Image 1 (cartoon, rainbow, N blue to C red):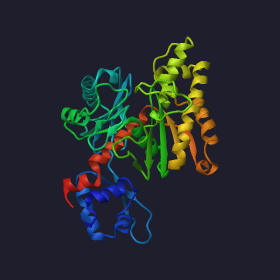
Image 2 (cartoon, rainbow, N blue to C red; image 1 turned 90 degrees about the vertical axis):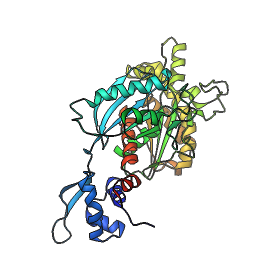
Image 3 (cartoon, rainbow, N blue to C red; image 1 turned 90 degrees about the horizontal axis):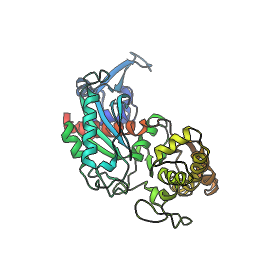
Image 4 (cartoon, rainbow, N blue to C red; image 1 turned 180 degrees about the vertical axis):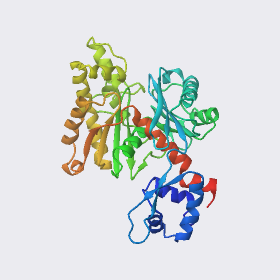
Length: 384
């Protein structure tokens, strides 16, 4: 087994919270001289920076270390079914500037990604970016993504996107490494990193035009064998056999409880709505029919989430997406607690997402930074 290289030490600071040279020595078993040698190129390249002195255990007060979030910026985009948010962030995920684009995944990958690239180039000219170097680009998609190829994998609501080389398209256009992720996964990473960093297991359920879940365990995404983990929108409900899903099957959770399904039911009641975004607007206006149907959707979602909670045993269950609201939260809780043993939920916090539309943006920044500044990548770039 190779001794830890510079990239491994950067990882200890960036992900594990090591703050001083002494803490790195204790975690790695390396000598003080070797730690200094490994840290030198990281400090010279600006990947790490020193902070003010920390408390001393005897002798000179040690200077601290932190990941340099100003070392560059990341271009990120979060695609929805009807709109897209493009943004530029620093390496910590702070949004420096953003734009909401009226571009739909229905336009197909070429047109959608070209629009994102064009908007990103404009955003990079912003004074808020300050000419900092672009280190990577990331995009969150509303469908399954194969983590080995960064390509969409049979996305049910994204016609024309299956196996499209999204990462290659963005990387070639912007000249930097690219990461592609499912949107619920990206949101889970964002919420966990910012709001629940100490939770060893977190599940985020996104309820928008579709339904999906992201699972983070010990700070790492669980994607499954080919990116299909968390695709709960297509779990079949035995008591909804006639509900036709947009994937072509009957009985899927998304067919009865997604934003698209609630919008369809609202339209039938004479309240025009097309998507989860429309339902969100109606909820914000206090529309009673939207609130009632969203709570009913929450009860159905709770049936499936009860199985997820019993299997994963998370400490935090976050509800995000367009339908994330008090009615949805109430409906999920109503079924979840009734269908699980007390032991499964005794340490469970069930809450609404705190980051809103920026959850996926922040999560994608984290994903790109893990790709570009991960231990293996840094060791290969600056040597061991």
